[in-house]
Image (cartoon, rainbow, N blue to C red; front, top):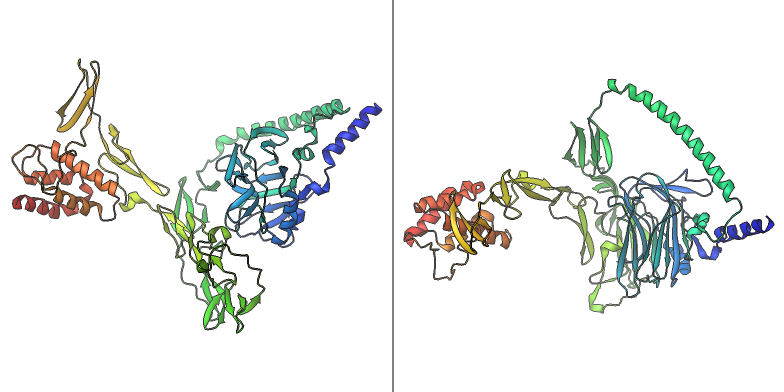
Length: 611
């Protein structure tokens, strides 16, 4: 018994007694809780350490002056463990901890509630960016203990003291340069915001750091009270069973009264559920729940009536401009928070910031050494330090927050927001963008026998019932199928359509001949397409002119090529009664451009008369 108690002391010392020189408590290093917006101290998973609630999208949890102290313990190490106890909001995708220099992520741990995945981003020894993904959902609004242990080329993931994954990976590089920043609960000032509660966020410079979080995983140290612990667990389970039975009994009583309940419809948006007739604001849109469907309208921002000493400006987290204090400096007006660099008579650069109606002197940080030629140096108006041409302002975080369906675009002396494809700006800085309904606005390419369906940022063409797809934008009727005895290829007409049939001695498949006539000669000296008939039809140049008119000059070239194929197919397969009938049939393939009937008919038939 004495020897067993000695073993217990040894094992618990191995489990808990981590050398302080090997442990980095991120909360303590960042002095979390002193003056960070969007971070509040709350009740945690346990009371042995502090826990913090992370909210909003305007916080900035980084301290450059303490980052170097933390990185000294981690630099050039091949074995380390990231520990955290967390409770993440449902469907939230956010970064727990990020160590990066410019666009290079040396170590970043991310939890994606949208993809139900834990991601480890790091930089390999050959200076490549690599991401290791572990399918697992942490964003379920429940407490979890998370541990990611790296040992040279080995990574082990524990969740709630259970080993979930163990893999061999490319060797991470911890050759972390100076001026590297450490971010907590976000990737940078504009992206990767974690929403929820975090506790005990630590970096342990040892391969099995998870033992300090889950001492029972140290299976090499058996204890004498294992049996007593098992008995205690059984008693706890009996207590849980009794409480669960009581709750089940109360639930059954409530279920008996459900027959008299009224079940109203609800709506779901961005992971949130809303009741019928409830309204809310989503970016630059006012939304409401009506009959189980989300209906949103773009917010109309009236011009703010600002006093003489203020001006309208965008504020992070709001859609419309608000009145902000202004400063008058050297004949120009600056808004609260604007920076301006000037040079004194000696050529020294001075940096000023607009604060409470006056430009206040700001201390200059040392400028980094530039590695580009002097001819590529760019002078900026909001800082004293020059940058190289092609500088990545978006990663730096100086650009406006590109929030909804918008992405940051680098310029020569700064950055701006630009709407993603399929979206349009909801305000003049393109920070918020709304989906374009191509179907309602007639900006789609869905052709005959299809129905346009709007999707976020795009559209899709659905075939009508009984039709089969030709390509992404066109459908046709089901072609006939015949059985033959010989291998052959032939052409025949079915219900005024031309088909090409190919097959073997047992089966033949027929498809519409949409490309018949495409192989015909198109030399400039041949100004018309011939189908073996004596009558004249529209010349190739006129057809191309019609296609250009119907699709517009900005249409992609592959659209014009497809239109050419369809027009050629129609000319080659439709019986030619007269030139006028040909033009009418041509218009049939493009009935959404019926307003151009007179122009096309006149152009087509005039070309025939000239020919």
